[in-house]
Image 1: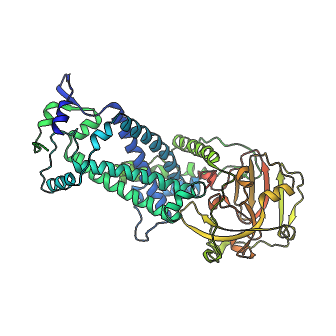
Image 2 (image 1 turned 90 degrees about the horizontal axis):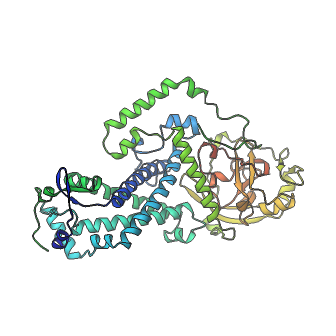
Image 3 (image 1 turned 60 degrees about the vertical axis):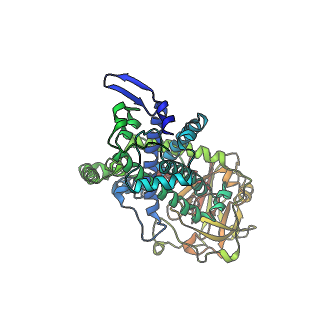
Length: 241
Length: 263
């Protein structure tokens, strides 16, 4: 795996020395458009949730939600931001839907996603979890994902698909009544939508934390390339599969 | 706000929402936004950044968001299948009394006098003679046990009876090629639905709940009931109905709620 990854290194000469290309413009653009759409949907979704919480013990703090200042919004719209939150949610939904279809479609058609995310084997996951817990997990080549990363990325895509399906079941419980039936009923679809959101938020916490711990991944996802010397950074180098 | 709204309907107040308070208290409002920004910026995380500069009420952004909502109206009209029926349930599932909902509390409900009540008709209708309660209640009724879904996220199963709106529109000689059916209510609420939903067999002018005349708190003497729409699209205490091609809007819709709101 490592050797295969290394053979694909494309070095480019720039004023700052040799750089290694990691993510294409397409991958970076769809990644950040997706990030914005998801954050808008989480923030507005939390405001929508707060109106009629599923769990009486859980409401989201207003500062973490999206929908406008309650007092001003009440003067303008006769409600405290619920209508704004819905407008945000259903606008970002289209961005998420179109961008997601494009990213997944191109990623799968080009074979890039299968190459990066597959195969995931149980033994590989167990090995990498052990290494991670002993802070001994390799980050020598950020273009090659370890088994835990693969599992997380596939998992978050599945969670996104769950959000799409449960969202449609909530939006159209008559036109798409079969989808709603899959979640037992309307409240079942709401619960599934909530659980899918929780999974995505958990993913985001891990994803952002690890990105901050390995900053060159952020460079890779913004500039597209990282300095070649970054590949021999202070991280343990895995010697083989 | 720079929102373009169609003009002229009996369902809409002649003047817009009074925004003079916003102008008078401009400094106060600016202060509130500054506080919100400061509060947001000291907190951590990307979501906090979003609230720190929460631009939800910015007029340019509102135009974009409401244009998207208009696009969602068109998608929903396209998704709407006039032959698809909402699921129905059994008497054992019915919640009685139903859940109260309005833009005020149940103790503020003003009783409508059934004897003095008239249903006024307007717009593209041949016979605009007002209807008395007795005449309306004498029409053949259809009963449905369906799920009522609120935009807020709650729902319940209820049992409503009344004349199908399609039957009523035929009887009064309404132009069924018109785009909208609008409603005005005794509590100053108003709303409107698309003609396709108005003609759906499960869309009724409900006069009864669980076999009894509608209780005062639930829309007496008549409400719109359709399991094809969210709850706020089904006005209660209706006293006027209009068939029109001029977009009538609605109480919540004019505040930004999605107009079609079909289920």
